[in-house]
Image (cartoon, rainbow, N blue to C red):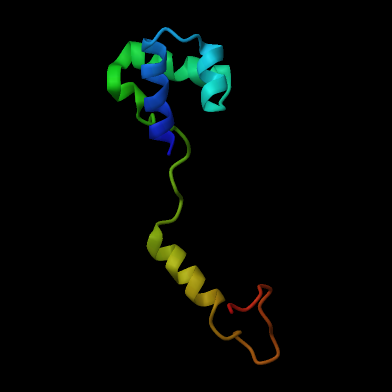
Length: 89
């Protein structure tokens, strides 16, 4: 869906529509139109793709996540104990 929106901005700009007119036609902000027009102008079609995002790498891999889910959805460790999450339905 995002790619379709971005791809609609470019031809509208090529038709000579202003950023405000494109924003109104596509129900987005002027800043959104400005961003994608600028990226297309600088990078061509590749500019319409999502950029890599920086950030902290994941601490745990999928194997650990699966183990956590398995542990928390199994029986409590002691008969008198209860887990603090709702049971799956």
